Image (tube, rainbow, N blue to C red):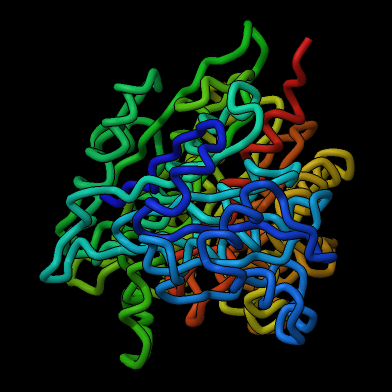
Length: 488
């Protein structure tokens, strides 16, 4: 597993700047005014910093941008990074500046001199998130030593980066799960890794196939019946509140999706190792909440299955009864995620009576056609609940866009032989998928469906992540939990 950088906080030691190994990062406001640390850097580099700050190159730098000066004279560091950033920079700008440093971070770590920057924690979070590297299956293996990043600030006693570190660990947990190949992250291995959260105070329960059958989770079991890997549901409870009903987070955990009998094209099928992205996000949120001892009660439930073609696999035209009791005509076995989620959603409501439910799934390619890789699709039956999530996502800079629901879309699910079909045709595919899930939400239960197919894993680097798994949603849901459980 990948471990984020280690944070250290100290008071500025001007004499130590010249001796610092690795990289030294200096935050300079847009007007080029030098802090005491910057003046010391200028002195040991024999005026090189001042010349750069007075240059046209610095003037053309965008706020949040970093310039690397390699092997600076008079310093032991291999590079000096000059970051142009106002002291009053907002969270997004500070995180982006930190990400620029994280992308360049080496094994020897860094000394960061923030000067008068107010949002040092956001700078640190951006640095940690962008420094992510998944190397478990490369010859080099995972990093033997984790780099340390030291922040030299005027009042070190006032800078607590423990919550920042907890967020980074949660995001890394999600990214690692999404990045793992499916021969490693089987349903059994996934459940084992989630069980390890017990050491952090999370109550974890693994429901096996016989228990799922007794509960009536027939649609979930139908998806996995063509696979040698046993289907499972993992229930994770974080009890950081009093006796109030929990917020329920439900994740689709299809560890590999061939499409089943409705087989996907071969080209690009290797990407379906990430079809458990919803479950991965739920896992990352639960880890962050536990590490930072968050307020509030949250239950995370993930349905872990593998969708394979086999003599035992479900077929198009089969009819399966859900845990709720509704019957579903299987039109397309590649629309399997909703079959997993509907049973887990119903179970979550029956058992926990939650204050609200949020499900996450890499559910449809249609959402990528509609929103690209910039935003997750957001569907909800409750305006206030949805607004609270969108506010949290906006604050954390995680793209999310509300999509419509309506009876006309729901009508596309009508079946001649069962209570509903599992697909409504090509038009509005992401919306009809959401309408399917909505049928399994009890009257009066606030619900949000997040289709994260376009944002869970991407083909090119984003501001806070290298290409691949992003960990989208961990930050937004973590904030939502705090917003719903304010300090008294």
